[in-house]
Image (cartoon, rainbow, N blue to C red):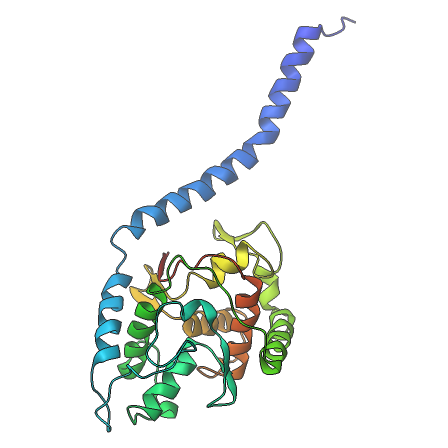
Length: 271
């Protein structure tokens, strides 16, 4: 029997290596293609229209008290918007609660403008005052674009809320026994050719948390973080959480703290 020559062995090894590398190369090219698609869409992001509306709503006199939101305290003092987004959720002494951006806006809309916060929270997404909140969160988030996340943990309630968020993140349930961690608790996970960020650490936590609110191309709407979380619960086949509920705020704290030091990119654009 003739033995293979060194040249043939080298060729066989090269072919084997190429075949092994093909799946990895294909996966990389798919991820690169999606990234390129997003980059192309980012130029002329429709979220800019929501930002313009939000800035106008911030200054517009509305509600039974005919007042604007210009005295709303988002955590950095009355009326200060720049830098507020990257320090939310946080504890607010006037409500004695940890609040995210959406729940804090509800507080200001009720106390300053006389609007009914409970009624707004019960309104379907994309309707009436909910649509106005989407514009407000788009503009407020844009005012902190490029800044680093620094979600506070100095108050006992902030630390407690982080721990609650962590438990909810890993809580399994529903007919499919899913948890948030099922999709976002480890590196290198994908769904429908899309990379899933690991929300337990950076860079995934800041990239995932810091991109919302975002314009969804598939629905033609801008989604706030509250709406994004609501849809996550839907995919888990869980009952929908209440808008601006303690559970969704706790998840926001968990993701935000895990993303400390990461850069805010919201409002971003998503598929």
